[in-house]
Length: 109
Length: 113
Figure (cartoon, rainbow over the protein chains, first blue to last red):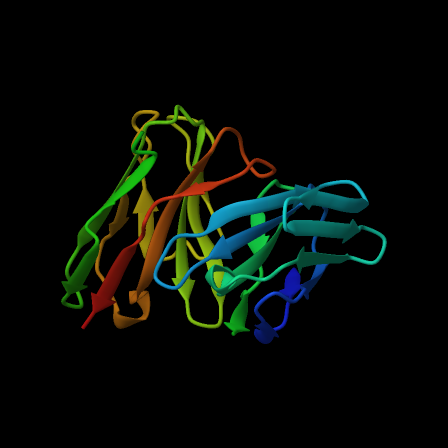
């Protein structure tokens, strides 16, 4: 079966750095996405990785290792507005997205 | 630019009744999707449409039907609602299928009693 695993909840301090991990087992791989979802709102796109390595976009970076079936999202200089759920999703061999259950990130002052 | 709109925002529906959730996009995207999101389970794909006139089944299609008569609209119909269909429903679109960024509508919160 296909499976995406990520921690259910994480807590971090304002101004700090947090790393949210995602491991996957899917039938085929056509890229990995990270989305942000604030409570009661729709998911919004953060990043896309299809090749191994680190993609940096401002305070957010995303890493991929295809051989390990592993990705992480790194958030730097945390702000209170970063409190949200972070969703990991993988495009499988049919180009359908398989979604993880999401990691709820709580930022404390 | 509106992006993707969904209607209604929320609805309470009696079991056994039918209902159509509406979704419209103005980004000229080819692919459109319907998901349901339940606590602890993440997003699950119900149906998708890669181009106007075509549809396909996702992970949890039972009890739902979808049509794509034109490029902008993809209504989702519940023929006879059951309480297990209580969920938040998101419509999304992307330029192409799968490995393209998906844009999401604001969601419809449906409660089946």
